[in-house]
Length: 76
Image 1 (cartoon, helix red, strand yellow):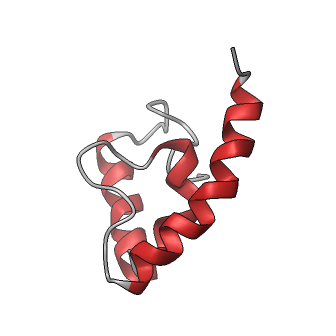
Image 2 (cartoon, helix red, strand yellow):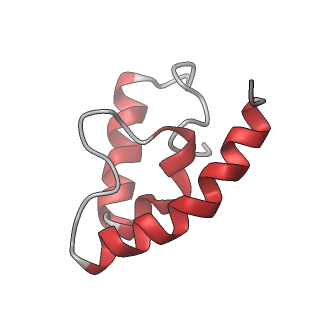
């Protein structure tokens, strides 16, 4: 019975600690389930700026009009 905004607010409280631990041990913020809205602010914890730029370029190839999952991973 939680609103979407309340859910994301609660996730942010926990995510900071979880993803700091992931970064400390060289883990990945995301794997088979994608990045999504809750992990988006932490992508740089496990991916370099170069890797993120490559991901953006691949998205541009397959979605040049930026119509698929707009804003889910990148603010383009």
